Length: 122
Image (cartoon, rainbow, N blue to C red; front, side, top):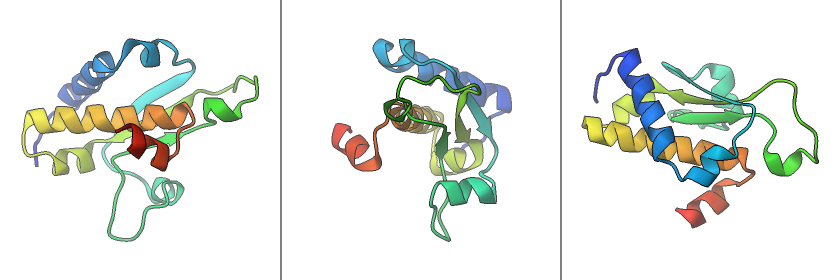
């Protein structure tokens, strides 16, 4: 487990977003990227998490592939979970990579990819 301040964690998120391929980041619209310490019971349900497991990140919204030309009023949301991500990491570079990978994974959901499609691209 690695321990970082909230400010350091936010900087790691910002850095990870900057490290992602430009076309994917440039095309993001109306999407909030936030972090929380841990997922709520409701978020665990939304993420279809089995007992004894947790979430590293969660995309909440309507994927672009399902919008049919409609723009939502409220932004879609990606939440990264500091506690589980920090617990999984053994070093600062591990944490940075976990954040980058989780952020990419959740952005892929924003673009409409399911878990099988994401695994195939990884």
